[in-house]
Length: 245
Image (cartoon, rainbow, N blue to C red; front, side, top):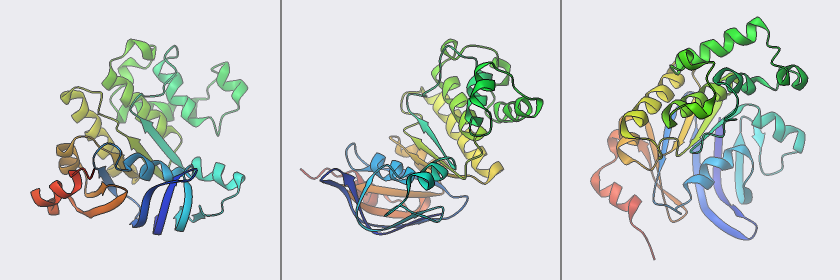
């Protein structure tokens, strides 16, 4: 689903990631770890085609990101769900409305604004609310919810777009441990039930080891570890988190 070969990425004239070789298969559950500024977010968000390619080859869902046209970039992004640390919900709208907003590529904007949802759309929204365990709050405004509940709404909204890939950028860093574990468990469940490829940036090493099948360690713009979570030794952890001044 994702192929990176000798890939160098960055912004404007600044190179952030260098000589990256990675392949991601359908249905994987991957955690990206490393220090702040190591390049984790750049690596994650490059999958949406928004990061400059300096060198190498880069394919996502069979689209060539080295030279992708705008119309194909839109098609690519329609197949990728993104979950942010700050939730990015419309707080004044209900949980249901936020979840249905994930279907906007299939619902005319005028009908969405008037909240004229079809039965099949409500049924789909309920399915996704059920899997993230938020259905009982479906009519509440999102600004009435806790952080953990809001993140679960964000997951349901991402699912509503029926993506092939879900990217989650530090989705639990602002949550208490109990809420964080619930969100991680739900992301794992989504991965298993729908076969969606899930890639997560994680600040907490213990969550990466507990929930992720594969871990990618980034240090100073390079991938220094890429293997199953059970291969992550203390020595390798030290290599990943060593700061080079």
